[in-house]
Length: 221
Ligand code: DX5
Ligand code: ZN
Image (tube, rainbow, N blue to C red):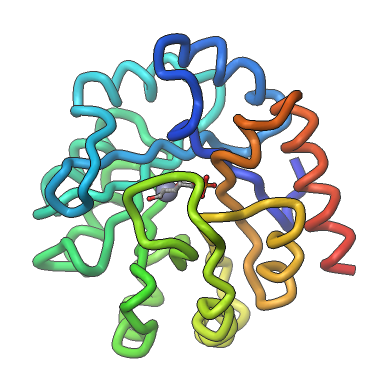
């Protein structure tokens, strides 16, 4: 896949009763599968417990990007790294020791990522820039798919892109990404894109992933 931009579709809006075949539909055209883990505490919704998530991680044909929307995430993040997640994202609002947890994720062989809810500014997280392999700027309030893209988050994306500078850190956006909004996110400096409902509500999910990548690449030129 292109080394400059990544499409990491979320399975939150896929058919949970046949996840293997849903993932198989898009695996060959996606960089990672984005796994939204919600505990009904940090966000008002529940998706997978650790056992169910581990089954998905171990059976996925392509790497899993575990987005942990869970309270008291520190030990859980290590568990998800040890379970084989290729990348583990913790929310800045859910950890008691950002640096130790990000280091722990990497120690257990996964890429480390720090996510910010819409109400959390990037300022104050500059000192963690050497512990992260990716920043995730939420473009919806976490908890549900199918919400409207928050264009007001583009200023935070621009500031995060500036903070990253020449470091090999990916900048992911998550929430409301579609053929229309992906261009806005590229222009602001994002290079990694989660899309849930845009992909799984499409007639042909794989074709939509391809189209999202092409749209992102063409707006990057
Ligand atoms: C929301 C999740 C997102 C969501 C994206 O809390 O983190 O990954 O599933 O879904 P869409 O693309 O439908 O906004
Ligand atoms: Zn997510």
